[in-house]
Length: 157
Image (cartoon, rainbow, N blue to C red; front, top):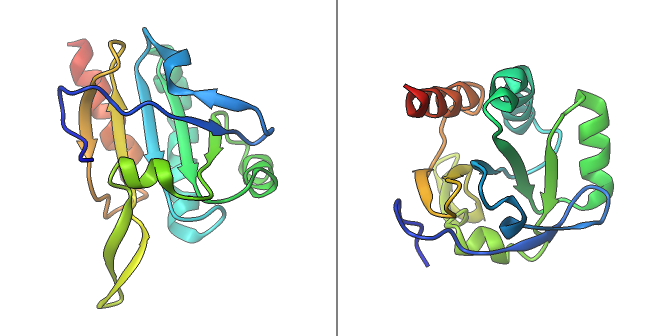
């Protein structure tokens, strides 16, 4: 399944850092940023997560929900959240089914070699449940949260 702007975002339910089930449908009526990343507490993933954290007041002021998704388990997510004071929810997709449906798992180039893995990407889902924007391959993790906020801000004007 490919993610298309203007089409309904695929439904999902995943466990969060506390082991509680989180369903996308619970956020109907809100803008949701779902960002997919390879692994907790690695350099690029930490820069991206901390970028969303550092912009949190602006994101939260817009009523936007941020959900980070990786294959890591709840214990790893809890350590990551605690270490960097992340104010948003992290979800575990251990079998990578949701990532696959969102185009965030598959073949990618790493150090010049083709490999299978998590593709750093982000999907903005509007209040109507439709995809507003899809960043298919995020190349600069540290700069990406600001680009997401820029897109959210442009919507307001």
